[in-house]
Image (cartoon, rainbow, N blue to C red; front, side, top):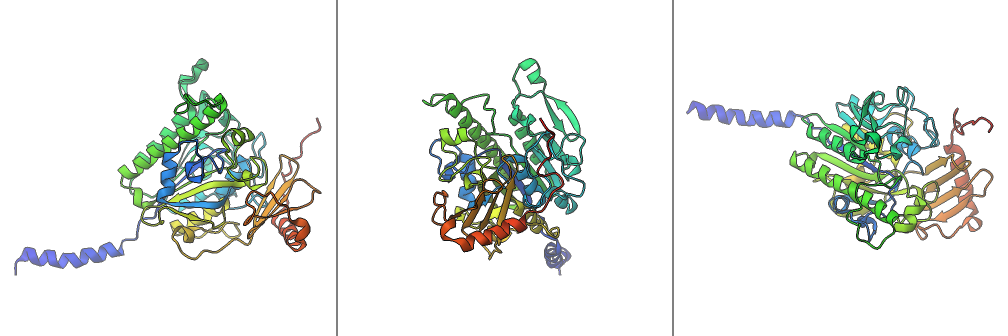
Length: 439
């Protein structure tokens, strides 16, 4: 027998056996978060005026959720629920306030859990969960690399001359003296691409909380809307959304070029509903009632798209009800590690893969900028309380997604059940509501 032939045929089954023994590489996770983008601001969610071909392509190649909810109706608490897996009745940061309330050392984030599971972690954009040198900065909450804004108010300035890289302040010299040569979103988006370019065999979690289209609205260009017969403010908001979409297109092209496409789950969402100006000019809320800072669905229901080539059925839509606090258990299931006990989230990985899915018994929100407002959802029923002592408003979203028909008087049993949910979902906090000194 030819010795070379003997060796090759003997090695073949051994190689196959070794290949089978090798554990499958854990999937990469990219989570892209827009800022103040409304449910109706994307072509795939019904917009007829704003060009969003890259995000629309994500929807065409993935799963579009129609009943996905942000963690809150403003940015900081929404991001807190996303990172920790707790809703605003339980999490640390329950409202926007300056100086910011930081995450504590004991608050465990999705980035920390994934890092422990062997993931390389990067975050580029707006944080909002801890001031410089506090316990809540990204580098102390599981991120190997961070570049962007720590303070959410600072993030309103797109032509800033300073940002943060990990725990070091860095300078954008192109903006010195009001030159306005370095648009911060562009710089941040580029850093996200660079993180992706450096990816190797290690699985990664890339969190991209972009700062646009949050006000102030002053993009470098009004294209492709400069010639539209629109108010300038409308052109600016639309141009910012399309600018973000263009960067998402670059991100996806890089993912494909590096051969990472089939092992990467890409999720796109917005942190809360649109501001009133955007809702008026661009119909950013779509068919939903309310805007940012409202507890109606226009303030908290958001676009949410998941794409994973070869694993998620392309071009589908799901009415499965999810919320931001579901990301942490979903990521843990993807990474093959247990979720922390007692969190509020439920993994939506089964829905992504077309398998039977556990449902939430209810969702809950609370908010502190306008007194103390609350909301809950149970099945198709939605409850809203617009301040302490105010009556509970009840809506059935299946037949009334715009929350136009208040039904409390005709459904006292639903009112009673919702009152119980709202009572038990809220836990006391040592900082909320914030005790402000007398004026």
